[in-house]
Image 1 (cartoon, rainbow, N blue to C red):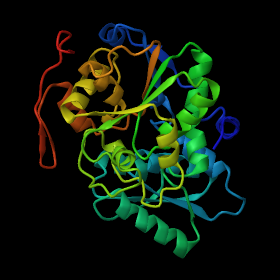
Image 2: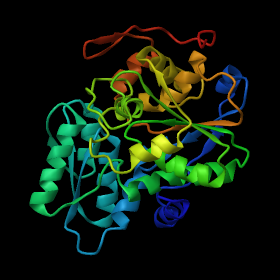
Image 3: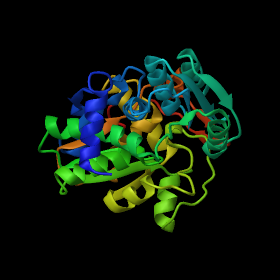
Image 4: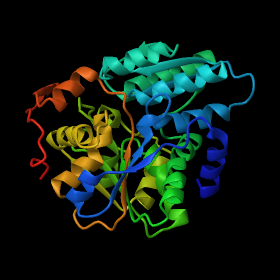
Length: 337
C-alpha cells in the first residue's frame, strides 16, 4: 500500500465521494488551547466516510461482475449498497444482531438484500464469505482490502491540501481501514504529522491486537460507538500491519466520555454525529490529549446514528447498552472539563 494507491483512488472516486468540508471548532479549540478542525465526512451522500473505500473497490471490479456482498457494522454496508446501486449491481449485506435498527433500515432503503446472523461482525463475515463462495458474488471487505484502504486514505490528501501546516490528526479506529489509509498517505507526505487512533475501551479489537502483537478474538459489545465494534479478522492481511507500523499512538475512551463527546458536537458545533465520530472529541474533553501540536484535525466519520439514542444523549438522559448503563448528564458550557 503506497501513496500512489491513494492518489489512484482519489481519481476513481472524484466528484462523488470527495470534497467534504473542513471547519474550525471554536469550542474544541478553547478546550485544547490550540486550533482544532473538524473534517465532516458526515456530509458524504450516504452519511459516512465509508463511501470512499466502497466506491473505489466497486469501481475497480471487472466488467460482468454479478454483484457484491459484504459484512458490516452498518456504515460499510450502507456505502456498498449505495455504490452498488449507482453501478447497477446487486448487493447483499450481512449484519449481526448488534447493528442498530437505524442502520439496518438505512441499508434496506438503498435496495440491498440483508442477511442478519449471529452476534458479532465475525459471524456476519462468515455468512458473507459463504455467500461469495456459493453465489459468485464479489466480496467487498469492510476494511482489510487494498482498494478500501486506499479509498479511505483520500481523506488525508484533502486534509493536507487544505491545511499543509497540520500537525496532529485524530482518527477513529476500528478494523483499521480508515486509520491505515490515512496513515499511509500522511506519513508518505509528511512523517512529522502525528497520527493518533481513538477507540472505545470496551471491545476494541485493533487495540487488543496491537497489544498482543497479533490479531486476537475480542468479544463484541454494545457501544455508543457501535461503528467501531467488530473484530479485525484473525487472518488480517493488511490493516493490522499498517496500523502497527504507522500509528503513533492509540488512545481509549469510555462510554461516559463518548456520551459527552456526542453532546459537545451537537450543542457546540451543531452536528448530528455517531458515537464513533466523538472519540477524538471525547479524548480532547477528557484532557488525555493535552499538549498536542496544532493545528489538530479530527474526523467526524458519519451521521447515521439511531436518533432515539441520539436524542437521549443530547438531552442528558440515561442510555442502556446491553448490561452497561451510561448515566445521563445534561450539557452546559461549563461541563466540558
